[in-house]
Image (cartoon, rainbow, N blue to C red; front, side):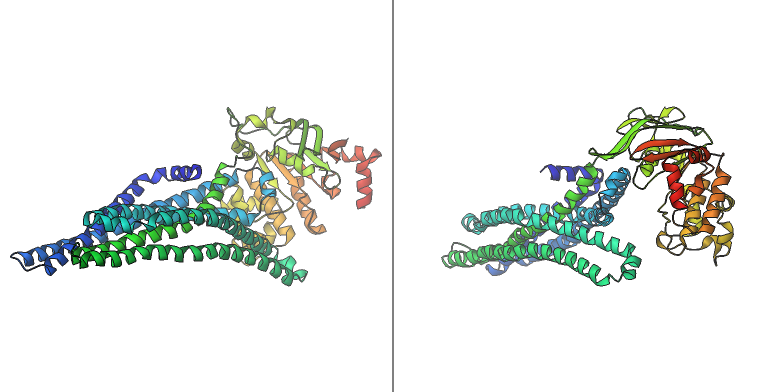
Length: 574
């Protein structure tokens, strides 16, 4: 009930459309209830001895019946379209809200989630709200109102026979309750297995080069087969319960027809019930047991939809990892001073990553972080952009604790170039301009020149309009890396963060990137992570990190004189 109340609240903004749909549903039900009554009266006029005016009454009833059927077209249209309009607008809004909410999560959340599962929640699970509001809920209302109306009309025709036809209803309702309890966990499992399948497909399509290169097509086919089987088995398990339930409901509803045919026939034979009333009962029974059987079917659809709705609500109720604190203010344009004040951080309380890190980068300085893999270098720069919060200590920019400023204003002052360069499907110009959507073509070209990629772009068939492919698949690693640098340059942020900007490029491309970094030095504060130590020799200060602590600091020349980790790293690379 708590979930149902939450689902109802989500549709509050579309209450006007839903009210029109529900009102039209009531009117449609009224028309459907009135028609058999008129047909009963026409039959009564035909079967009775002819009287004066009977023919005129038949004509009038026929005209009324025609008008009712015309109104039925209108009410059915309003009922269906308004419910669908409200439902699909709600689905669109929910998809936007779920996507926006997912965007607000911290990086730690994404490391623990599968992309395919998140995609499934945005697209597949939100679609279940359309089924709820456009089909299940309106049909439930229609069915219950129809059942109540038909019972009333049957009572007016013959109380004893009406009560006898209601005998199967309690059994149908009880069996429906047990059915829902049994089938809903099956549909939950089905939704999870569908998300698991989407996740595997997403991973495999992204890693298709590795799959083919290592000849693992058969293995991955088996993995996909296992997930397809899990989905199919969960679906069939639910359908197996459904296949047993619905025939039982049909049998119980058919008992009503047997009762009317038997007991009603007996009453007609004894002269206690007119033939017209028998016809009326039969017509109303068609309206009566159809909705009862429909409720049983809707219980199945409802269980399916509820399983998807639960997954949507779960995302919406998950708190954002990093949010603006109360009273946070925009930081505005900054000079670029960065300070770590006794910062410690861990992903797991039992495995600290950074321990009591302190340093300062003055505006225009280049600070380099070096050290073995996995010692916390990337974590440190992610703290600057506030992708994570320190466990203790402070990160300050221009003397302001970044917790006290708005996220948007903080990140407007930072440009990132990551080791795993991501390019969006589109043109080179669009990817460079991503950092500044309002940028002119001249600004994009100037940024490309600074990144030493302009001449390379001009050699391509479509120059800046060249399509990069998914994740930049049509470009080399060095080209992607320099486009990423151009994108960061275009942002014109006072702080530039470079995470292994030359890790996966050849010597010639490394030289181009090094020239680009040298051109940027002094114009903004740069924090660079590098394994290739040649790229950070001109850094104003090099911080050597080992086991989450700064074990050395100084210029390249100072550190080479000292007998420490930095000199050993240089020797091992040489």
